[in-house]
Length: 192
Image (cartoon, rainbow, N blue to C red; front, top):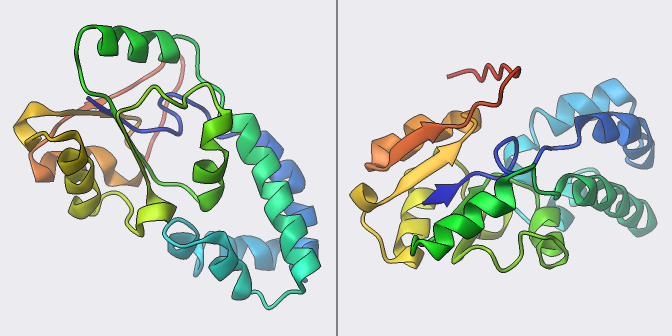
């Protein structure tokens, strides 16, 4: 069984990120609008498939400013790396039943850096972080990487996620059964 991270077993702290974006923009020498245009535009894929230092180099900022941006981002990420109610119990129960458990997440490098500090550390047999492996969902290679590390064939696996990044269809194109996790009272409408 392979899980997605954000909005599946943990929530990205959108409010905290929105609160510090103006400060991040200032450290990068940009207006908020310029920052958001670049962050969600030309550097979006890079920040999810490369080390953070490479991404920040694109902004041509002083090392002190880059270090402050890294610290701000890690602070927000740390807030989000908290299991949703029932997540740890579900994963633990699946492990007790003998299932191999994997994680595939589209994330910036800070998730991998902070992972050992989280309650998730040690729960998964395989953890695939996009920024570490240089691949992101729905690239079939990221699913195959997790399958190879778990020693499973696609038809032996299930992928559970919220549907962002075309992850469910991506899993199914590889031959993995996909399950969309929906939480009561929440509507997630991901393009694709």
